[in-house]
Picture 1 (tube, rainbow, N blue to C red):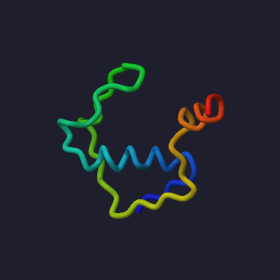
Picture 2 (cartoon, one colour):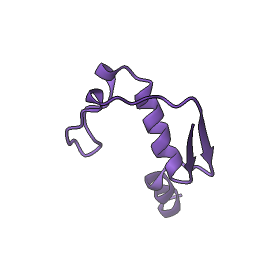
Picture 3 (cartoon, one colour):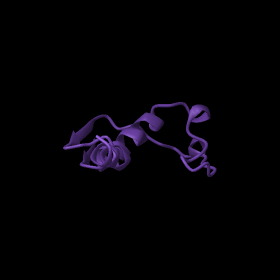
Picture 4 (cartoon, helix red, strand yellow):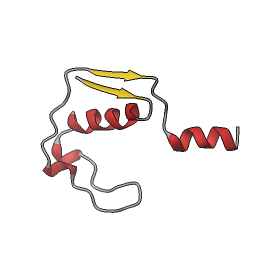
Length: 68
């Protein structure tokens, strides 16, 4: 079981999504374009995912605060 609180909710959601994706189809680059090979790692999926007070992410929140 994975428990994500606040900003950890988005990170654990990404992990769970990648863990449930076949290795050949996992992310290969970061948002900045840097190489990332998640397909070479064993990522066991969690049996359950609990999100507590999770929010969509820092960029999304800041965008709404600055330019509602």
